[in-house]
Amino acid sequence: MSVFITSSGHFLPGPPITNDQMEPLLGLVHGKPSRLKRRILQSNGITTRHYAMDANHNTTISNAGMAAKAAEHCLSTSFLGKRQIKMLSAATSQGDVVLPGFGSMLQAELGLSDIELHSSHGICSSSMMALKAAYTNLLAGEQTNALVVASELTSRLFKASRYEAAGSELDFNAEFLRWMLSDGAGALLLERQPRGKCFRIDWLRSFSHADAYPVCMSVGYPSNSSDSRSWQDYATYAEAEAAGALLIRQDVRLLENIVKLGVDGYLRLISEGRVQPDKVDHVLCHYSSHYFRGKIFDMMQRAGVGIADHKWYSNLYSRGNTGCASIFIMLDEFRRSQPHQVGDTILCMVPESGRFNNAYMQLTVVEA
Image (cartoon, rainbow, N blue to C red; front, side):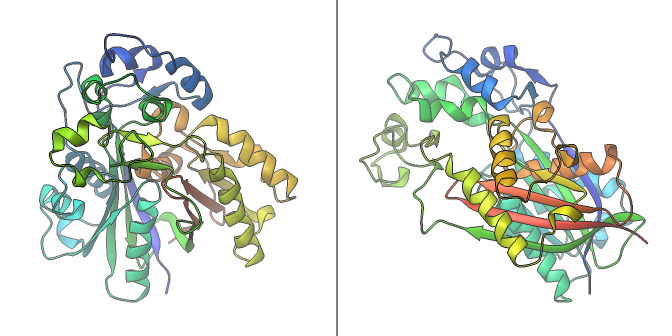
């Protein structure tokens, strides 16, 4: 039995926001322009991104709302209607509410009835975990189709007021992701039969290193690294906010490990016979910054398993880093805009820096 991606869709809120428009929209922290913004933007290479937030810091569409828009876009070009969907598998880093699960909120938003439901919580690779859950469900013969949706609404974390509530001047780790992440959603439809020109999922694997590495990207820990309390351990939410425990952080000292571990997983897949570099026709890699692209290339070349530059596709520079939604948005835009032929092999890679979980997938272009 095989599983196919027969349709895809995405949604990006609002107009494209340029680098010069970012800080006026997100707000000056303590009335001062950032000293780090230009340096971080030069490194990540992103020129435009999208925010589900207006200049008055009002949320223009919920995370579940964006996910629903992406799902509807996906279904609008599919052979199935909403009432025919059997499973919904959803992923996000942070839903609109702490509870219930994001999948439940999305199901209600879409108006889907009597479906099997799965919610995947994590960071960038959570979309691939949601996809794996749906993929294995179909392989097992439990369902005939599944709608997989990933959505991120991070801009709410980047309002100037969030940082001002934490008191003192921003540290680099707290400000770093303000100039890296943005909003968007992507969706894939999985079926057990091919429909027109579509993608067969050959395999899907991931390698987690949470036992070997400390937390690299998080929300919930205070600014003081010697304080191990969670945001929920404070007497009040106000105290947690003042301690910086509600800010999103990236430990940039650990971030370099993402390249090494990402390439290590790639090498393991080669040794297992799953990847044959000379037979890969397209690579879709969710590298979070242009800075890492060159490092990934260099390490693969030194190992003698490089893949030619012209085979790589990314929309990072115009769409931004939309976390777990990135790989789905990328795959949808690749399917709609890039030449690919029946028999082509597509390698998808998602390195995640949360606590270093790296996911990989191989697709083959087929036609019914």
